Image (tube, rainbow, N blue to C red; front, side, top):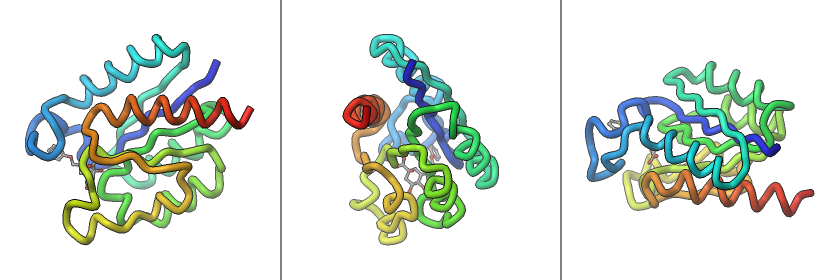
Length: 147
Ligand code: CA2
């Protein structure tokens, strides 16, 4: 069975507690529950991981090789700073979709650059929590066309 890793980075554990006008009212637990329900409907397995630590995210990407077929990655602010995450994705070659709740291109200049996009299958941003479902469907479709 296809298996996806839903990987969330720094501060996304705070979802639903502040800045709902930017990130929505759903908590991370709500988002993960929606992903689990969608995975059941689509007949895929998922694992959900969140960490505030760059090295732990690198470990999770490395551990995905041979365990998960694709990664949905909201790397949070590390998107804009982390060559280590870029290298982990490039090194493991696990297909990865970069995801953001907000439209990072409509925000501050420092959010416009991504180290992840260069090694991602594609990027989804600006659709709030629905983006996780869009990303799951996009990854399932991507994996099907590769088979
Ligand atoms: O829009 C996104 O999903 C981001 O990845 C969220 C990151 C931000 O640094 C990226 O530029 C875009 C920030 C996540 C912080 O989430 C919070 C949620 C509620 C309260 C405080 C922080």
